Each structure stands twice: as structure tokens, then as C-alpha cells.
Length: 93
Image (cartoon, rainbow, N blue to C red; front, top):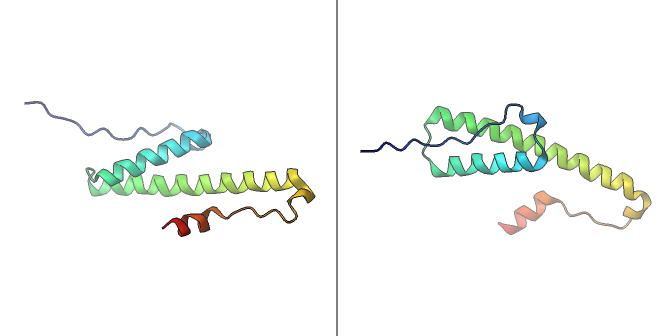
């Protein structure tokens, strides 16, 4: 009889040092682990907290990137409508 251990998503040593792509990948791992429903309540809450924190950092990094693009384009952005990602997600639902 073999006992199969649940594999927890790996957490980087310093999440703030992770690249945007690494952070997205980690968030996807967290979502998958929570969706499987195999974790106990404490593990689930810990992962949920990490996911919320990651999501906020990612949102901040995206906002910073958007501001930089707007600064780089300067006057070229007049009349240029940048879609709001949160509104696009609501429309998909």
C-alpha cells in the first residue's frame, strides 16, 4: 500500500524579488491547489492570504507599468483609450 503525499505549491524564498511572470505562475499554483480542495483549513487560509498578497502586488506592478507607458507616450495618448482590465473581466462573466 503506497501513501500518496499531497504536493504543496512551492513558495519562493522572497516573493517580492520574483519576476512578474514568476508571481503569476505562483498565483496560478495557489488557485489550482485551492480549487482541488485537498488542503486542510489552515493550509487553505495560508495559501489564500499569500494569493491575496500576490494579487495586490501584481496589480500594483501593472498599474506602475501602465503609468510608465502613459508617460512614455506622452501626448500621443490623447484620444487613446486604454481598456480597464477589471471591466473586461466583468464583461466576460
